[in-house]
Length: 450
Image (cartoon, rainbow, N blue to C red; front, side):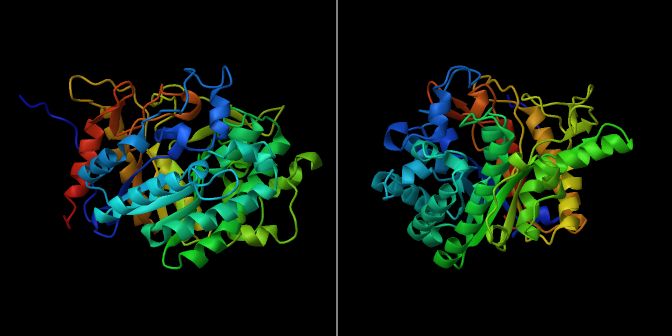
């Protein structure tokens, strides 16, 4: 007996149905690779080893053992019918501490990319997805301006090695998370907590991006080169001027701080509202480097936040009642996704956009060989519809990547939250395509060109 499962439907007469619109899945190195003994330790290894930092006390030493099972995982990706795979490279797996190429790490990535290309799956590479080598953190990490130049050299070596195997390079994934979560409030690695640290780390990360863009273009002139930013749109609790001002300040602090310099060469005006000691040190020429033209912008979206005025701070976060939330506690709000994309389109001279991450954590449990994750399917349906609406409004969006290919190490949450469209049983490393993965496959395989 067959059991009916939910489906995904792409809007009629939409770019989402066209052959040139790319569909993909995404992962990150530390979250899936495992094989920690064959790479340099990263800041996340140190962070995981610090008691109380990871909710379930776990680590990324094994994760999904992708280094061991990569061939099976590529076959799994192919079975989903996607056009592209977004992966990140572990800096400490590709390079040794002295900057030389780690031959085993390099061969792993070369073999992986070659196999993807043989199967006609375009390779999107993110050079930095938060796993800074610990030896660089020991020298100051992203608080040390020299790390930006070390990143440029890493990008140079990586792009010369990978070359045309890569369809699109992204310098950084979500510098907001690296800077704010890692250096300003300390809930991510390396666990530092000071406003001045967060602002300086953000500047040095953006500087690293700009420095890397020039070497990527030189080494891979036929590829696409960009950056991936996450956005959490900021809404006021009420229509009062005070609440609106609070939401604008939060938006500048969390969102515009990272995109505005890329297109205007300036930080938001709230920079002047910070204490002198909290402002980043900016050297002459830095902002021009940061504003290096982009071939594309990667946009990650999951949810929105609500803010109100506070007597003690520029803004205060508010949790709404009676709204749908995912297993990680984030509100499901596809309308904010459309509004975000349209607002960025109006505010900045954007290059083409790829939705590089979008997805939902749900409390998945297999029943036999099936995982019926209906909330995730509804999430994807509503957010693909939101992308369609943004395209209809004139936003140039070229592709969509589901986060994530498979369940994985979800940073400070450990293995407690599952974002994958493929279920991973960690003790056995068995993979099961969830109903959401099957629905995603069916929707994109039955586009007009298939």
